[in-house]
Image (tube, rainbow, N blue to C red; front, side):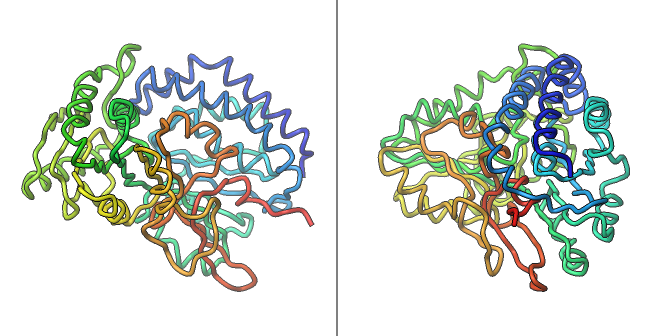
Length: 423
């Protein structure tokens, strides 16, 4: 196994390489993903900070040993909704001593090729990139004895089909999945701060993040004021060419997501909701859209939207908001704005601080909560020193321990889940 100090030196070299290739990374990301020049710059800044933050985990990593033995490697399947931040997942697994076999999303071939060109001179064959299709890559990883663990970012439907294979081959399977995150505004909240945060976290990346708020619950006493503010912030979003530095939101990457949004909007209107803003779709460009009078039998309140569409509902009692938030098959993250009672409310919704064994998939709990705090602050060091993940179908770990198949849920670090404490 490569020496611990050597791994840190190579991550430092990667940081230098990313900084030197910053402009090229941003340009390729804009071209490949359709994310804006502004967003891709933010992402590069974030990964440069995160790579430095791995230093804070030095003492923890020094006490770990990799899940891989000689000749083995962890298989990592990355999502399409990112570019620079994906380095965090790769480095997390590598830093505890594992070789990594990386599969980018097919549409990210430009990002993958550029990333590989930065990695190969530093890491050699320890981190290798695969260009087969995702299904072929996963099927090989499932059956290959040289792959003890698989980490997958994707949809719960896709991940769920591998249960039998994971059981049969005794693999460890770490899954990071979708969100349908609630955004709850209680009495006593700073409505302007809450509305501004909702607009920012909803429209950055055009809503194409698993932690983008999608279900919004407003206490009736602040409903009108909040809605007016949020609509104003939504109207102000500059939509346009992703390569224009002034553009704040561009088109969606996935045509499948666009079609799902059309279905959700049609369903909402047919069931009595109103489109208070937007609803306009041109190709893959979905303009900021706000749906009011939404309720839980609508597709838009149950299925992941993954776009710049917000479904809003009012509530009268705090307990009602609690039950509405829990009424979902996803449990990634919840945002709460309110008075001093907001923290108690969050405690009722969140699970344990780190992933733990469960008897079955657990619903009605969330991996993390933000209380009167912007998501941009909460996301700092995520996947590095701050565990990420959730309950329900938002993520899980499958593994066989002492011939017993187990399930774990809750926030997790890929570094810790691909390593063991040293004996």
